[in-house]
Length: 589
Image (cartoon, helix red, strand yellow):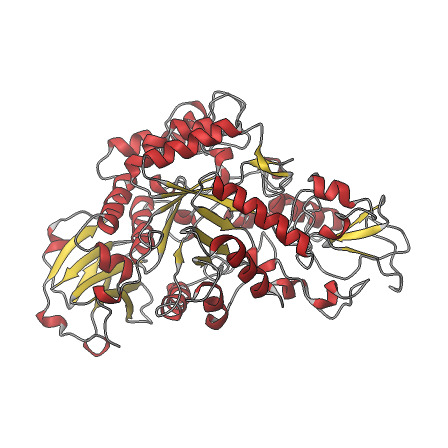
């Protein structure tokens, strides 16, 4: 395959950007209530500017009763009191734009809160809002059924289980029917079959874009279209699974309509979260290809490698597994579409605890993982705290968790006897829970890590006395400064184009310890080599897998997580040894 050249580049500002995700509840608290707020983000704008990021993705700050930490929205066009006011939000937007940083907001339109006025009005069966949600009668033909949060003689409409545990249906006594909730009971799913729902959503999106935001991250956006076994039958049939809502029958129609109505004439960023695993590339390109409605997407293939069937079950994974996932997406969207490169976010454990080594090699592995994120082909994401190598929290009791995705299944399992005690599943929860990502940013080594003067809404990691922003910024060899170097290399150097747009070619695809690849754009070549082992490993450039002679190449070290010492700079481009968790980026000439 011929290497692309600069003439082949399909440039876009969001392809060349670095995205930093802010989970506002845990970012910075200014009023002492233990919850992060918008003024707290404003207070740290210079920090974000100095880090060098281009886009802020802000998790939901809308009015919400917080059953799912803001992903249960009660009013799409107002700000939650805990976070501040609309005036605060507008000051945030202005402050970001003054620093040439863009803002994307979370769009959560698969479901609302049950406290949203649409759902409150939907309880009146004669209201126009009743059909904004999915209401169905229960089943009365289930032998031996004694009721589950509904009438004693009714079973839920079908056997679907919600993502957060328990039936995906809740009974409403006022209505006398069940409503669908693929997530928490307080998150009823919107009925996207209803054109009025789509119009309401599109109007709301226009409202935010008119206020000056730069795009949306679209939550579980591929769940909007439910299978006909639910939409066409009352009660639904049991011939479909809840998973059939993933990439449902009308999803592309709905998103194409969204694109035409809202996005088509605007230079905005549209990121779709694609829940599920194993999406085929034809489907992916339908979302983000040349004629797709979205800019890019989040897939889950790599972050489900270590997950079992329930929140406390874990699976073993290998470097080959991880590399295979990324290879599939790097090659699958190479000619059409664009990847999002992430290893952590608010829904995932801390990346260094998960994919690296949060003990002896915490700093080395955190830097290696950052190197991977910034040197693959796609837009890189930093989740708050990754830039200082924050780790998972040492949870020791169920009471320390706040996340409904963790608490609900555990309480159900304990109640049913499926597990005997919390201690039996503690290890898995420590590894998998989303709350690992949601502990407060560790700004300094003071009480509560400088996050709040009050009682934090969730525990502060006790290792904040060593791992914190203040210490990292003072140490020129820290993870924070390494992120700065990567951002500069990708955004403002003579290799920026090849780092962003260069072709990806993997080397030694079955190496059990080292992941190496070439990025190529015209005559420009970068070699990235990453040792995922806790011991020294040997690697090389196989002549049969490249279109040049490795023996004749000079390797100029651009960046290494061990520094630019002699071992990293004085090397033979064809083969070399890597230290534990060592990462190197070379220009080959």
